[in-house]
Image 1 (cartoon, helix red, strand yellow):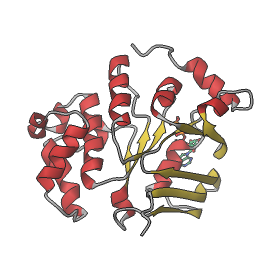
Image 2 (tube, protein in one colour):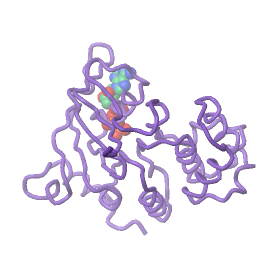
Image 3 (cartoon, rainbow, N blue to C red):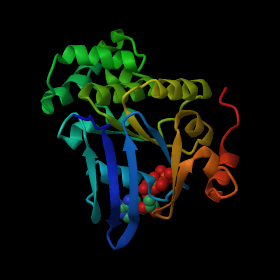
Image 4 (cartoon, rainbow, N blue to C red):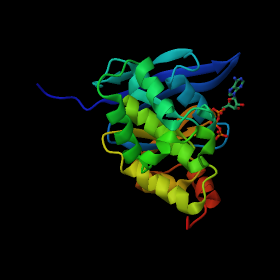
Length: 242
Ligand SMILES: Nc1ncnc2c1ncn2[C@@H]1O[C@H](COP(=O)(O)OP(=O)(O)OP(=O)(O)O)[C@@H](O)[C@H]1O
């Protein structure tokens, strides 16, 4: 039997806030092993789309599905790394409890301790941090714990919402490197940092006022027929990270 590469499919998605259409007819697909940047000006609807994919906001129309995934549960297969990753961790809980609780809640099979240790290794965090409380972590460490939590659950797709915000140039590079080493994961990477997006992602999708207006590889997007929005982002991106 032919094995399918798992694919996250966002099909003709509309999202409303009250009477306002925030995202209109968004179509996007992401396979395990692919890394795709979602780019656009502030307020164009990137976070809203991610939240809708996660089911945090209802879809007005359209569909989100994973085809060929290891689990039937979208909640396990697709995980959001929010803009404020540190704020998403209960400050008084130890890292081990933060990672263990969702495994129990979602009834993830297998040895949970083993899953947690493996996830910590994948994000380059020492197991000694497992005894640390969340409020005792640096911003960069907290973000890696949030990613480790998603990996321990068995996520096959990570929706990373501006994961480089607030990191110094060296940590930005480390984070891009760490994300690029996560094999067998599909990453949708929202960032205003075009250089990091180019380093990490094979292709990008451009959003404008709630619409996806362009997509393709970097040669296309930064070429003469590419989106002018990328030129703006390029001008705003520091040329050197370190
Ligand atoms: N619950 C809501 N009610 C009304 N308007 C909303 C709501 N949520 C988001 N919006 C509006 O929808 C638009 C898209 O917001 P969103 O946060 O998705 O943009 P973004 O592209 O992620 O921006 P940024 O890059 O600054 O994070 C904005 O104009 C925002 O004010």
